[in-house]
Image (cartoon, rainbow, N blue to C red; front, side, top):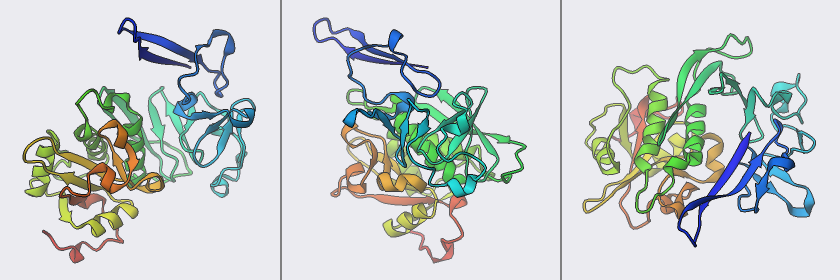
Length: 311
């Protein structure tokens, strides 16, 4: 595995390589062929390397990972679900075939591009990579006896929000931002995982998507108020927030679900300063009029649709 960091030379204005890091399967750095100044702290699997106290541990969120010892520094918080495995082991000691995103659960990698989300489901998702459109596509079920042949849509939304955040093609490029593509990636992932008479996909720029939702063009969505959207997201449903700009570019984002909620209320792709998991008013300024929508087919039983007033 190799990581390259590029930057623009102030002298020649050309893009040059300033850091190259090679890794062993468990994340240890191959010093003999790695080089460059320490400009990028996020290295193995995109995780930040914490060099404080000379420990050099990777921050996986739920716990720290020591690539030197090839194991986590603390037990798996979900160890009771996997009592048959070493709770300190990284990816069940199979880093070539599996990947851990948060230090909680890991994913099976098949053919180099397929994930099984470890949430009690046997559903398999293949990563589709097409520039700004990187998303998980449902690819059937495994034959594992440990899970059910159902799709956990909350897990799918959660992982797609993370994929959007980590997609370099969605980063601000000059004056161009890509909030519409990020939301479309989530809708593409859901479109392949759910059975509806009509597609849940919304095309176009943010203003066009906002207008389609506002005009109820796609009957899979329902306009709600903020509190209803917030509760829906907390219960694992897809909630969308929009800003329609009559004089320029609008904005669209999704409310965080699952483990992403603790990182920030909104999974936002926009200007660099406010991209990632941020507060609602950082995603869309407090002074701007916001509208909220929920995807009905992913609304969990805890939400009573009949009690939601259609705007």
